[in-house]
Length: 175
Image 1: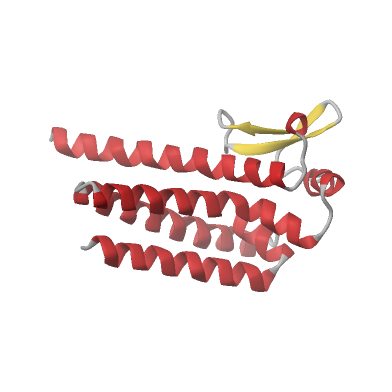
Image 2: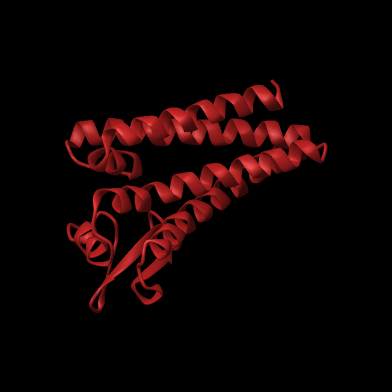
């Protein structure tokens, strides 16, 4: 019973860690693309956690109408916008893969398998959920639909690459 509780708490901790890495991935991408440090802020205590952009004295969340316009003031163009949005998923996936590899190589195979499954499930739920909500509402609802709205072909390629990486990771760590 204690083993199950520890397993559940471990997965929940891993999910929270992935959320933090995801949001800081957006932050790092924004900073690399020229958004000044005083104009970008990670908000993890909000629901949902997000990266806010400053518009004068107001902090905007990604779902605010003028969020994209504020980003474009710092760095205009399709490629920078797509890179900023993709930064969260790329950082999250790279971090998860590195952690899973470290666990596997250190002999913690059970933890590696559990985390590989958790990250694959999270990816699938987020991708499918984002698509379903966006299609239902006919509006962008998350990172993947925002990426698709900016660059559809690059987004399909990115999603396919990440899905393949999740499958390869699952095969690599075992059943």
